[in-house]
Image (cartoon, rainbow, N blue to C red; front, side, top):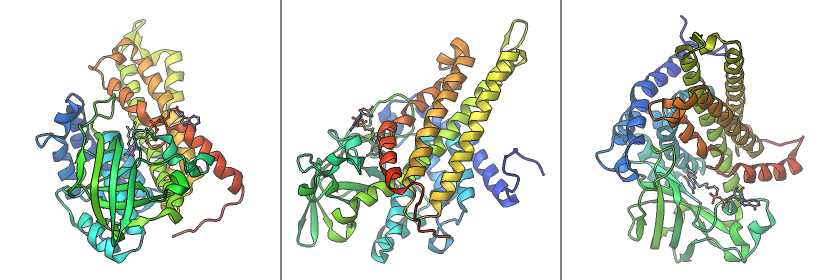
Length: 420
Ligand SMILES: Cc1cc2nc3c(=O)[nH]c(=O)nc-3n(C[C@H](O)[C@H](O)[C@H](O)COP(=O)(O)OP(=O)(O)OC[C@H]3O[C@@H](n4cnc5c(N)ncnc54)[C@H](O)[C@@H]3O)c2cc1C
């Protein structure tokens, strides 16, 4: 049987089936919904009438929100390669919609990894059992006054007591009381039922004196800002979160200052690996659009693709997409199988794949000529969607600085805890 060619000839028939089903869902459900949402205001995009909910419902019914989790705990038990194949196809369908699913899987996955049975019972099991999309997640770390700062493990200023986070958690008996505000950039804040929240616990340790908790967003004292109007990724909503004397049980705080820096690195390790993957998908989508256009558009009496210079440009794009796939798959495979994920590789995948994807996408626009700048052509949306790749989940230059800090201590020898 031949379906799509893949450079890995060892894909099993199950791998191909999983990939092809994800592609069908991406093409028939995700792309049309994503394009529809792209034309809406940010408020319309998250309203009850928005088609985003059709996507969420269908994705949960198919189990895509738990595909990468082991069967023993209620997931679909996909291998790292299978979850990469699903991720590539679904982000090809829509980077934003797939990121919405990824956010939820990420935060409940983090709770699962604590191994705390009480928390797993309370939060993770209901998420796995959810089939209507009503349980979903966001990660709130960025603050109005702190972007790169809050991720800057390894920088001297991260421990400077003069720099203080804007969301505090103070212990009061068996509860924490949370106050403050997170930035308008928290993905899925307008839609999520639950939040993984980074807070300031010990101010004497500066930004390193943090904690991480999980909480439902319907608690008294939690409120949300208006959905953010932004360029691109308009199907991935962002918004502020406000906390006014919000009380949570102490057990929901699963990281305190002692493990806080490790938790940031662990989150970036998985998140950056994911941005490497979505960069690949977007670059591939752009390559396909450019290739199609080059076959259709006639100049000098023949299709663009028949001109020698165009063949070279198309092949250079193809080579970059394959290089992105190779790197992203390798890092995804690695970081799915070690705990904690290896930050240097994740940051390398994120920075390299996002920058190379943007090169591919720029070239795809150029191949479309002026048409590439109009909403008539899909490449215009891909271009807008791609702009955030080098900023989201950590600005690339900040990640390169952090990667350098890590390499200094770990290269060429690195101890890892291999899970399987
Ligand atoms: C689409 C999208 C989705 C996002 N989703 C989320 C989310 O789900 N949750 C969340 O919490 N946040 C989210 N963010 C926020 C994101 O994590 C931040 O935008 C990112 O960390 C960069 O912070 P910043 O935008 O405040 O830029 P800043 O940190 O202010 O950086 C601005 C510029 O200054 C440079 N700079 C910063 N610090 C230094 C330094 N020490 N030395 C030298 N140069 C420096 C940077 O390189 C950059 O060029 C999202 C952002 C986007 C665009």
